[in-house]
Amino acid sequence: MFELTKRIDSNTQDAVFDTLTLPYELRIRGRLKAVTDNGHDVGLFLDRGPVLRNGDLLRASSGEVFSISAADEPVTTAYIENGLPLARLCYHLGNRHVSLAIGVDADGRHWIRFPPDHVLEELAILLGAQLTHHQAPFDPESGAYAHAGREQSHAHSHEHSHADGHTHAH
Image 1 (cartoon, helix red, strand yellow):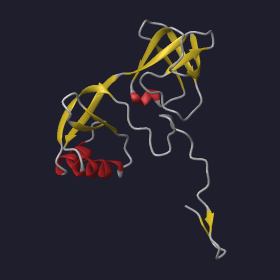
Image 2 (image 1 turned 90 degrees about the vertical axis):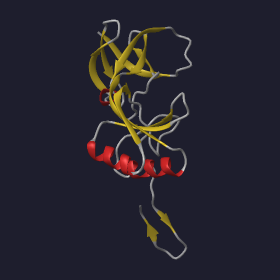
Image 3 (image 1 turned 120 degrees about the horizontal axis):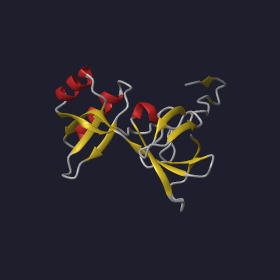
Image 4 (image 1 turned 180 degrees about the vertical axis):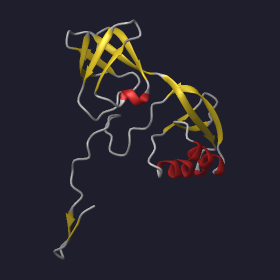
């Protein structure tokens, strides 16, 4: 079994040995056993926190490089007009604290993608979206506190003081 222990820069000159295709629910885990696209057994032994993204590279303890691929999985894609309708739909879906992917297709149509959920789908329709249920990679936005496409812990304090001697904590 290959032990995948280190995230590496995607600009590496090392050749990719194999690809590990995983759905989103497994790409959020730092520890798991899996089988690569070419049938190699691997174990992930990574730090918790950052989600594995489509195209990320991992190095095995024995030196091989493995590429991560986002698997096709059931998704709902909501197509909606750019501008205020898109912003409104993003706001309302995001306010539900669900993971969302946001993009534009080859025809220039704007979309928001999320795991199938009848409540979210009804909301999207009410806000003017046209829905498609299909299989596609799900690689949602990293979130407000991500840096360079990676989630990071939100470790800084939100406390601040004013000259009048009192403080605020968020």
